Image 1 (cartoon, rainbow, N blue to C red):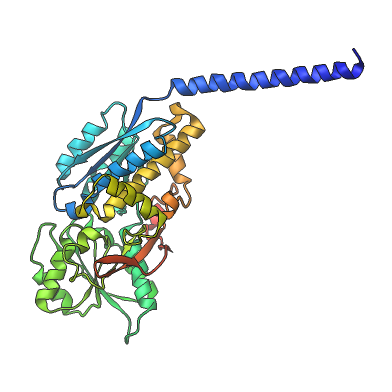
Image 2: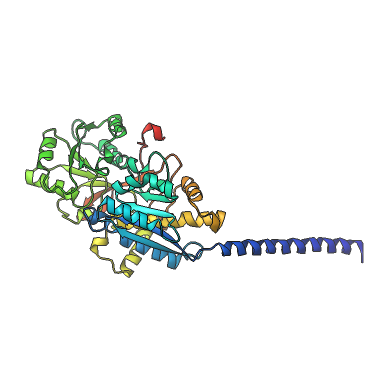
Length: 412
């Protein structure tokens, strides 16, 4: 054997050894990965699907079901593992919601995420998420999110979204003076979520006038004449609210009976509200942090509608929270998939899920249904869009716009 042949043989032996070592490592790692692989994964959702919030929040159930069907059937679940959503109706009663939460966190396996679709319940559970070692996903209210723990929101803080519209109105104002806003909202943690010092300070900063005294009413009140009379006397151009279900309709009916033509900007604009009386809401504006059902040419909406039609959903399911059910599930799928990819099945835990969420930047599921970013300090997404009610449709008058940061200083 020549010297060159001997060198070649040595090099070839090293190469074969390296290849064998590589495949042995892959086999060992793959075997360990497979041995930790669960039979299935639970995720949980609790909301008001038949109580006062139901016209808006009720569509969460079909949206969540349809999204996880898409994820399991077309995306293969999480690395081949099926995700089973467990969904409960707390009918607007916080005590019942707490009981249901205790039920779902004791499921085997325990859910990695618990989605809460009513603010008073998510407020009550903020500290429990830490105790129970789960991640909560819910609405954008300070009381549910801060001080920072295990809570994240599927859209910006309510006042952050409203101020985007207030600034847009100010920038496009054609009348004399400056636009004037009053607050008419529910007397609940959800309704009062827009009444913050930061909200009023930002309104002053952008040069709009705010009526300082908010008018509050109960979740089940049907007559708000007294509150409307007080507001009308102060001559606002628009009313601001944080309402769901029939709440906005109560205000609009009261205004009509008084012969008062004033715009309503609700922190939660959606079809479940508008469809209650399309004529009353004509021309009203509001924020939505995602694409609209009425953008029928958008690929994300087309994908959603494929499953909407496949599962024979009805008009009552065509609401904002149907879409939130979708992108909430897509967010959870993205995070769990990334965590398992990085840490293996044993690493699919709250610590690593939070790390992945805190480093999520501009996630746009389904080619742009929404845009989601989080950090450890800021637990809400940063963008929303402005929509206008036009002949029963919610059509965009802006693209995604960045919202101001209206967290209290101690949480920044």
